[in-house]
Image 1: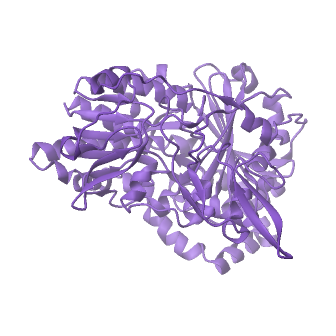
Image 2: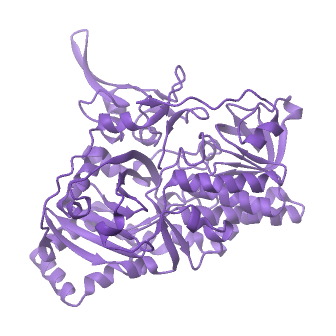
Image 3: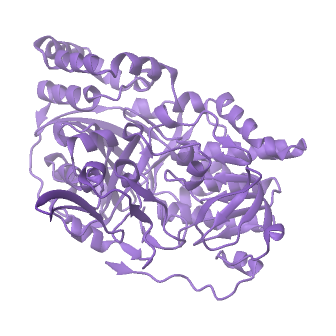
Length: 583
């Protein structure tokens, strides 16, 4: 496990700090707090879009980023879309984005149904090209750092700038109204607009009472490995301007609801899994083992060809927008953007988040500019909410057809009946009949149906397994990949451990209250002593008790344990904790 030291901050003048993009103590009493027209918290794509749009309209904008660099705290599966129907796209807001910040265009999409070594593959390119101008594979450290450089240049022109290594820990209130933010490293800052673009674990959204961490079924957990592959073009038989996305479902992941993905980068692969968090907990599945099941499947052998060097292991929570995208993501001067507002579209084989964060960030900024021009800047939140609806964003995030389908199909008896039908002789006959008419491929390529996919085992496990058993062919060849151990994966990550300041407190150490974290945490496992969560049986007055202990040093800050265990969870201080090199 390697350590990195914090950046030098020997100067404390705010203007000089902004010139360097580093934190400084702004000082001042309650009446003298530093004031900016807008404060943007987080410099991912949503925060960058908000800051750029504000700056272009002459709004004095300060951007606060808790990582040592933008992207060092961010993880994504890896695809960013530009939708034809969206009012804003990342390349329109940041010219040169695709050439400078992305990995490669994704031009072909495949869905693999897996049953043992049998695989049936469908080309679902038509589905992904629906309403799509382009889609690129990205790695967050490279992408977000590039965006941050542009954001800092633009916001400096307004009298603001970008500060890194600053953790915004809460909201500043006066007489109960949100008027700014509080920070670990700075005195409180007042603002006419606060943009919470601080990710899925948003402390601002929770402080405002707009989001909570109560229900595991409202979240996904993603785990990813970035794999070195310098000859991507040869391995996939593609040209430099082409790329592929592969999705995997079926019995590969036992009974856990979700699937796997593989995206081609410029000289690497992003390979990962995304599962419903409640299913992970119920099945007591270990995320790193589910990832390894994908990495070692014979289908991947043709691409990895026995050579495997893992650049980085990472994880994050993903909000299920169908359940948690906030319909009115604002309170007082605060607006929520991107994952902080639950704006992550995960509907069957469609997974889109960064593009919606970009749109939301720009719309929030646009709403503030208009509200300010009308002499009522604090009405920005209401205008932002209206724009999300008028521009069709909310219809994508919370489709009405899913609400109808889920009401009918996500109750236990209906789900079990559907599974039994799929597995029956009649169901198998139907699968073969649909295949002869290319009906299955058309069903998988339907944008309308993708927005109705229920969160049950049927679309993720039962149906793909049956399709592969009935229609699949055995995969030829073998896969000799040996993934790193969990200990080695943790050891290769970079941490700046905040000794003496743990950012998670275990409130109830009983296994009943917090034991789910032992298996659900992506850097923990049964009988593994090097992770965050461990369980042990202790003797107390002749009685045995099963308890859970916590060590925050290996934490990858995904937030899983905040939902499945009884904890007090917050982000580490600015610049502390894990630092992702790829993201």
